[in-house]
Image (cartoon, rainbow, N blue to C red; front, side):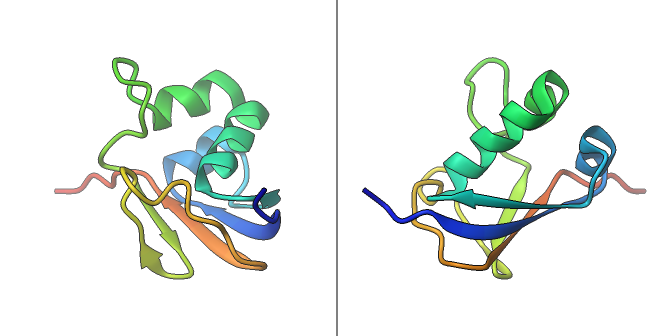
Length: 96
């Protein structure tokens, strides 16, 4: 069994609007568990924003960084978190 680590999750742009917060402290083993807790806490609006309805997987244009380093959502969601890791979740940013 993996160790549960305390982590700080920072949310940006539309995720801040959906959740009503910019930062959450959680205890989780990995990013998959973090996303599961966020889903439980924020419900359908969070799920609709973050997950592809056809595949159930994280939408490909979301960026997740752990301590400033990007991760690959196809391979890194189950990697163990360390104590006091900082997780940043960036939705797509439009511009023009």
